[in-house]
Length: 364
Image (cartoon, rainbow, N blue to C red; front, top):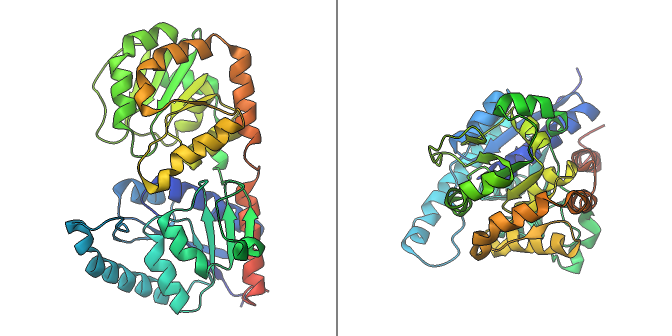
């Protein structure tokens, strides 16, 4: 009987960890159909629901975020982390994976620490232009390191293990249809469409800016607004389409968008780049080594987006109006964003996973 090989995909806290793993798993199974994919995600309902929709085999893991400073919350970290490690070890003993793919986030740390103890090889992927705290802990155990940006500041000793693959994007985003987008939104198609999306958890600052200047923005475009769970403003207008979250509809909404305003998470920027969309990036600052700001600054140096600080959001209507009146500039921005990321990242990473299985004498 042919052995079935198992890769455990871990990471969670946002769709930015989960969605790329799903893309890599799909590519790996195309190459090697006998592979089993098992997922460990956070206990957020949105991640659980996505994996259920995808009919994936998964375990939610309640893991604490790594504390960045001394606080009352930090005092609770040790017992919660020990509990997460014990749960992770139980999952690993039950599933017996041949390889771990770590997408980062606080969920990955207990899984990778236990995998290290149990001698299970680890492949790490870092989406952003600067390594997260969790990735910095895991990288010392990694057999291979895949990166979304060309440089993430790793020491020279890791250079032989590092591959600049780009960021995986889900294949379904390429199946979007403008006609389907018009049916979903009810838009006429005679006006440009501005899309505002703050990531899987939404953005209070972006939402507030849109509400403050909605009338002015509607003068320039029809609007698609993805607010995040629990953040629907309750505003109704024929040319303002609002949803807290979207899943199957997203490719069609992307296809309809003439211009996108978003945070600067690597996953969203990579998807928009794959679709050659013009982007106004409003990076979240002051958290996680300022990775969003550094992502945006790198892409700004490539002339691949327009960068607005959160403090400049009052200028959003004028910036949007200017870009919507300049189709050539939007086309240039979209092409530059596309060219800033390597293509076929999911396939490249899947190939590395299988090569590491072979190198570990697991895969024949």
